[in-house]
Amino acid sequence: MNPRLLRLTGAATAVYGLTVARWPALLAAPSGLTAADGSLPRATAACLRPLAFRDAACGLAMAFAPDESALRTATLVRIASDLGDAALLATALPQRRHRAMAVAVSVGWGALSVAGLLGGRRKPPGDRTS
Image (cartoon, one colour):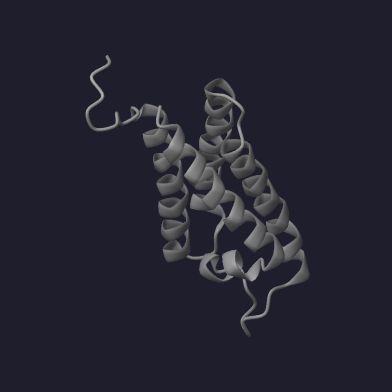
């Protein structure tokens, strides 16, 4: 496990989630969920905000987990959320290019978390412990 990578990933996820909660068009526009005139329907914003708050909560849990066991659990929740997003958005978004982009982003964030779980800690230069 690479706790530093996981905590940084968590912090970035939390910032992203809080940003999208405030400005849901940041997620809606690249997902093809805005109206023809580029505006964001209230119902769409209302549906995106809970996802954003979920991301913020998962990210904060990763960033501030008190120990590696809690960090592992928070990261597994984050990975499950990313894979769930990918599965849902792969079929739900209106256009193929939006679906492909959403899946790539979701799987990418999940892969970053998997890398953090599987990656080992780097030893400081000169550390000879095993």
